[in-house]
Image (cartoon, rainbow, N blue to C red):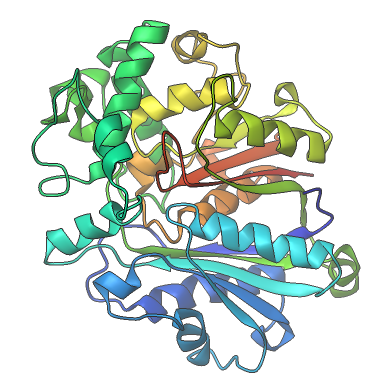
Length: 404
């Protein structure tokens, strides 16, 4: 959907293990930072979209997480919509909030996402990811993750089942594009350099491709350093109409050029995959093409996925993702830097907050405030975030394009 809403303020916590902090405590930090960045107090907020995916399992908070969190900030009475959409949760909150401003329902709204995934019982955490697929009809997932006709042991017990999904994607990409494990390691190494420049990233150590390849194997061909770590954290954005932003004197608003939400479905022969089809809608709504995009934050839940998404987003021709990486085009200083935040693999992946963390990063880039990881002359930026698994692809996806 084409938008005329603006990002007026953003905030985020550092992602990581926050065992001593509550869901509300994390959310309050991100929300307060976003409000301060927008130059408003919370009483100006007319509606809220609150994203959370796992608290029901990890903390016991169900149904009214948004209201419970906002109560501690003194906000009540206004509409609060609780959003759950797997790893696309916060992106969905953002898309819905922006759409309601565009449609004229509100002038000033808040979207935030928060998650606590670290838990002493790892099986609880693995069960969150297992529940992001169709548990009533598991045969499709089971068939998809087979490795040359055999099932791999340990899925959902020693690792998230989604690593099996990404391992299958990686093996398919190796066959179709000629990628190697060294290419996947190079993605992780690139993003470790980007993450080392991001004070909000969970891991800031710069890695070599050799270190990534030498890490313990999770499931062939993915080593541990090719897989996104879980995290606790929160991110938020204040979204305004152009009129409200003018009246309030917002100094550096960022335009939401488009934001498209779609759901997975059962493909028929010849159907275009979800990311490719939704990206075309997003480009059309924004009035730009992939050649106009200056930086990208995408859903690298595993490093091979980044290469797959290069092609699905039209950043290069089919089969050319490896070349894009090897030529340094997606590294800081390259033609189109990707995951300047460090991506999920280095920044961490608190699934209910990830999408708004992408918006935070791209807003800072477009304002020219990203410090050592600044993309020069950034004018147009794209966020892609998929979540869950349905059939052969993501169950939900949001692609948003921002500009100045």
